[in-house]
Amino acid sequence: MGKLRVGWAALTLGLLLALGSRGAARAASALVTPTPTPTPGAGSKVHARPWPPQYRFTVPAQGGPGVEGTPLPVWLPPAYPQPWAPTPHDHFLFGRVLPPSFEDIPIADYRFAARAPKSGRLHGGIDIPAPFDTPVLAIGSGRVIWAGEGFTFGRERNGDPYGLAVVLRHDLGWQGHTLYSLYAHLEALWVRPGQWVAQGTPIGLVGSTGKSDGPHVHLEVRMQMDDEPAQKSPLLNPELWIAPPVGWGVLVGRVYDIHGRLWDFGPITIEPLDWTPEVRALWRGRHLITTYTYGRSGGIMADPYYQENFALNNLPAGRYRVVIEMNDRVYYHTLMVYPGRVTFFIFTPENGFEVVQ
Image 1 (cartoon, rainbow, N blue to C red):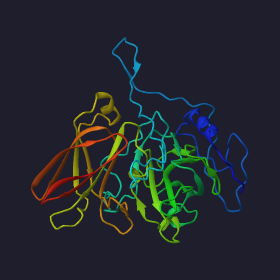
Image 2: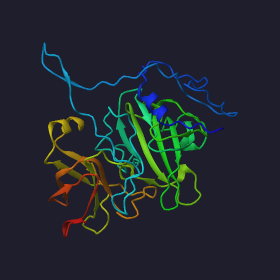
Image 3: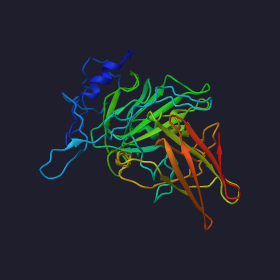
Image 4: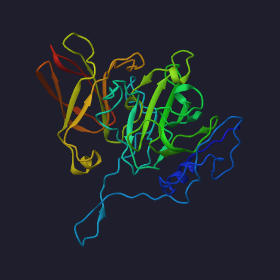
């Protein structure tokens, strides 16, 4: 397939499109795009729908009975320019997965390497809730290597837990290794295998296909270590690879248990001390954030430098109280999250919290 380079023009067009209704059936016919695209090869399948004629964003409004509402300032700030690396250890190579007016904030209590409540299987990415038919954006430029159902099996097949998914092989790698991103549970696909896309290009629509409890995009970042296929490549925490919003930062921890091992899927509570009402609105009014350390698994890969088992992106700069309850004891520490930076701490029950500069 010839190269189809979709740049800022495609991004602008994607953000001007109207949200399609969930009730519209996914078409199995040829992909409809504003410009002609090459025909897929034999055996290729595309699940798509025509692009709607316009796109409109709405934001919540405030006001009482008989009072006209005014928009609330609840949009996330734009991300730092990528690649963003304030220190030699950082690698924020990628950008947003949702358009600017949507809350690009993962579900806090089911983040990377969390254990599924029933099966106990580890969660290989982050889940970002959004309405049905919200455009999903490529977090970085690269080549589409998969677009359809069946990625888990390496071939087109129904019954894949990912549902409709897109996988990109990115132009940027890390320390000689290839990076992939995966976008799952989509309602429709707007790209084909072999197509090159620019960062920010709409590649599909938020849905709930596959094993899903509601509309969201499941995002994974994988790193190829040898010559294994993307399905077998280790999983990385996307929150250490996506640039934070301007003025916001990232909290990373390495938490040990009483036996000197990395704490396996232990709860951590984060209390923001400086949040404004506008920021709380972005976090759905939360006053506390409960999350968990990584569950242990061979497919989960910590960062080469931090060797973390906990990470939280999208935190406005300010003070946070971190609370860890372990072995009938409660440990807490107040620390600062700085704009565009990683705040990294190490915790042991013997020595408590150590913030690593």
